[in-house]
Amino acid sequence: MVASANFPLYLPGIKSSNNQGISILSADVREKETVVALYRTEGEKAVHTAEKTYQTVEFNSFSEIINLFVQENQLSDIKRLAVGVPGPVINNQGISVRLPWILDHNEISERTGISQVFLINDLEATAYGLADLSPSCLMKIFKSDVLTTGNVAILAPGSGLGEAGLFYDGERLRPFATEGGHSEFSPRTNVEVEFYQFLNKIYGIVSWENVLSRNGLFNIYRFLRDEKRHPQSEKLLARLRTDSDFATVLYESAVEDNEQISRIALNTYLEFLAREANSLVLKLKATGGLLIGGELPLLFKDYIDKDRLYQKFMISDKMERVMKDIPIYMILSDKMVLTGGAYYAAFSTD
Image (cartoon, rainbow, N blue to C red; front, side, top):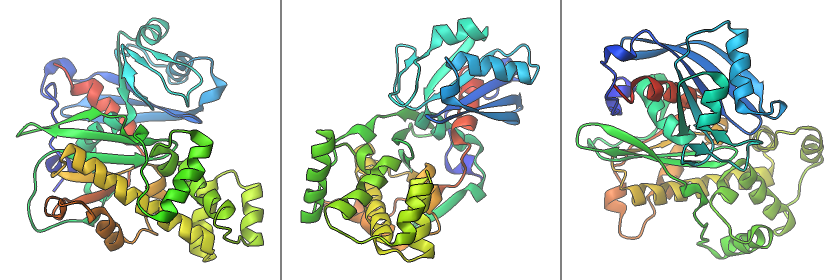
């Protein structure tokens, strides 16, 4: 069964002749890198034809990146552009503390000459990416024999913590963005109270993004290091001094070197992931499924104990009956924002 059948999206313009044979640009804008891709619509598909990655901070505006991509690929007659924004989109502007500039609809359209510009939250774009996700890009964590329908939740930790939902209207799924990653973290055990107090001294308000993002993984590690006094090997310390990718270093030290502090940090992180997934599913009543995406789960996929993750996900106040049959998948594709943006620009309108 193809992913689009499992997750039937609401794309009202998918059969419109106005949306056939058109070229679309889609961009995944991130703190360090911005990826731009060219798609062309063919039937009910948005087909990927070209792609390039740019260093975000090297440009004075997002429009400069788009104009350079158009120039390098000798493109013309681009009518539509989708922009995956790592934050909320309000009043045709995407504003993110992780970006060096504001994404403004009117400015982008004027400076690029592209008449139809779609600013879309990156997790909402990820949801639209389900329209073209192959079964091989979904890793099953849990699947009951009971057939479930309803809303769907998406949780995606990376540089930030993205959360989105898909509302089930009885026939199709309609994606929507949330900013649930900025809701306040709440501890459950005595050790977690200590962890909360540790983070409270740093941030004041402690959000789930302070726990489940890349920086959140570092926060767990430094709590174990500074407050709980877990030892670190010389090999780990040497790698941390020379390698800028903290998450990969921690993961590899846990898997390859059986480093205790690294294993505890990863296990703690995954327990928090299961707990926030539980909260998101309950708030959205996502009986249709939970999808876990993002850079960090993708990095940790071979480390994850699926049964343990499911059992931690199931812990709930009186709602185990609701939770027990919800299917859980991990998204293995790193192109969801690009593809989803393209499908949104291509087929969300007639």
